[in-house]
Length: 154
Image (tube, rainbow, N blue to C red; front, side, top):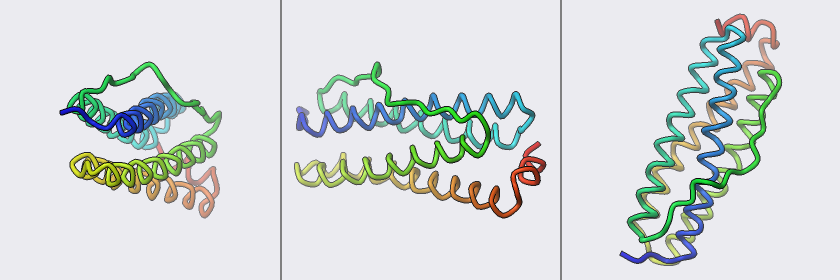
């Protein structure tokens, strides 16, 4: 089924965001593992795996719409040197992602591709959850102090 080119382009933009997130989360996960923060490692790694599943769904949909998935484009990857910067960078990434998915959902509706819109809405729910999880980490760091927070992440 030949899809709307503007929507295919938007899907490829979302794909670039997901591939960027995978890389950023995996680096943060491995940094936390190296520092001995196993719980944070698992937290970041789990989020990276979810982003991989999102990338897979986007690739499947682009192919279904007879487009070409572009996997060679990444957005800027922002690696935090310390845990608070990692969480803040990941939060900023997810806020941008939520905005991008909302815009793509509107576009899918405008071009009457409701199946794509439904897929994007499903992914958006996960992205909203990521924002919530990261805000919880930010709150914990603020409320406990960084040292106490990190002591709970072994």
